[in-house]
Image (cartoon, rainbow, N blue to C red; front, top):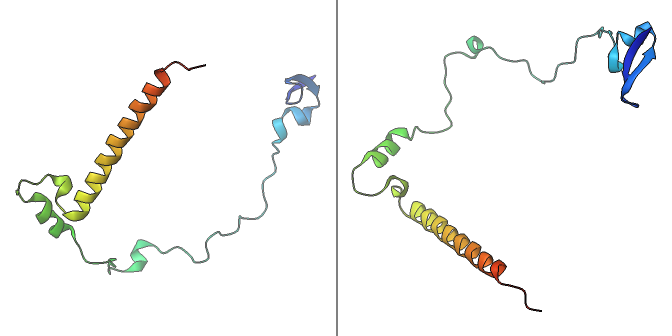
Length: 115
């Protein structure tokens, strides 16, 4: 006798030979056709694209290196001026505000309820 696991009863049950050798609905069928192509255009190989390089814009790395590596006493996270100062101060304000809110919430939670 052959057995298979029944997902309905969660136990081994008796079965026939063909079901025992293809468990849980797996069948030995192989598709006769190749799967359809997903992409609309064929893929280009690197050698086919040629030696031309396309950039999205100008290379800003040397300029940014000059800005960030200058020794002017300004911390690196504030080197780019007003936007960095605004972002830093907003982050600090939200952090301090969140910490104060947590302390107030803990103080309120620690008080006994008045009946």
